[in-house]
Length: 168
Image (cartoon, rainbow, N blue to C red):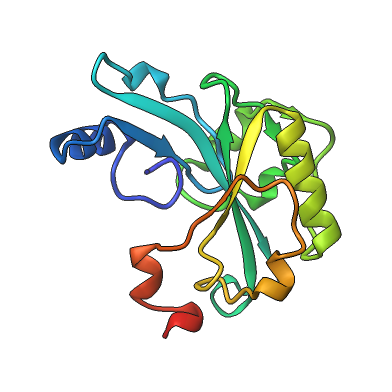
């Protein structure tokens, strides 16, 4: 959504998805988690979440990445784990100053140990964690296969097949 790098507001996304017959939508903006339960109605449910990225080098577009989605078990849980506002680089960056978070600003490292620590912290604080588009992110099973505490892995992402990563 427009909370991060999307072109539609959360409300517009709800309307677009409902028009296509969907009744559930997970909002997983980059680095920011927002409770959109105000958009719920008897025929539509929002899931609170966010996407969290580890980038191997400074350039996202040419570096391997690990991107995780956090899904709140309690729809109103927006307490960020392992948060650092310097990673909020898209969309409504002003929201980073309002984030309720656990602990001091967290410095990310592209290591199994650091990624595993974030997954563990997210699990301990009420989030399910999934691994996003490992092919597009140029990841291999030898790397992401060492991670524990994931409840799912995204196998197909249409935009990932449109350009970038190892699928080209």
